[in-house]
Image (cartoon, rainbow, N blue to C red; front, side):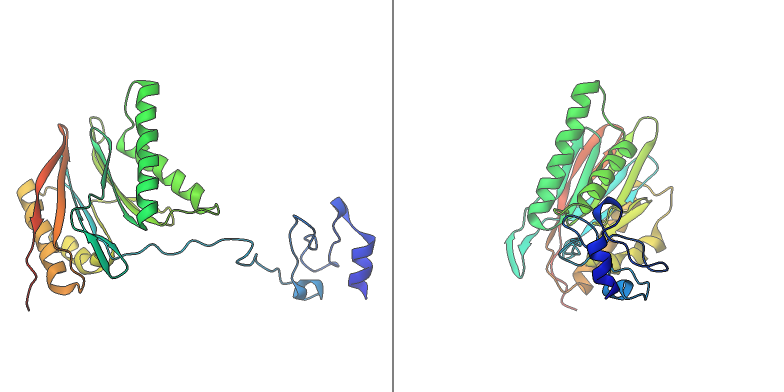
Length: 263
């Protein structure tokens, strides 16, 4: 038929074209694009690349929990300390916060190998930037650098399945908290959370947060959120790592263990 004649006749750049009114893209050639059967038959419908041609990112696991609260001159961040594989708990003292610089922390959850590899890759590049230029990246610059790398890898065959919070303090910009997900969406927020626990605690943050929140009030708000997790969330998150970030750097707060709520 006409399709075989077009194939034998060839076209621009060695690829045959469909007839007028259809998708004007080359028919399948080695290393080239593809035209759907419907388009070749004149229905004008272009086929999207199949799974074997275009890898798709899988959703990152959400059994972990991250939270960040921004105050007037500080950022309060917390993460659970459980390292688990499927239904097995491997350890209960796993630190999910990575120190990017003296005043920037990256909180990372997701697939076990991806979290460490991606966070350390960003960490070493931020430190390399300081050695080359003599000064550190601001939280905003670090967030955009992280987001760009996450977006680039998302479009490759080896995407990172991680969810991130980046918190930091800059002398000129003040405190900053950034939310990033595994699809490389970036947003600056006064408070943020990741994981299934976020569904249970974002309403609490929305209800009690205020821009002028003090450190004591922020700690009380954090405790409200963690107590809600212990009460409502079916998984066991027994302890949390808590840190403050301000003009003086990063400060560790004693880990907060919570007994399981019976009712």
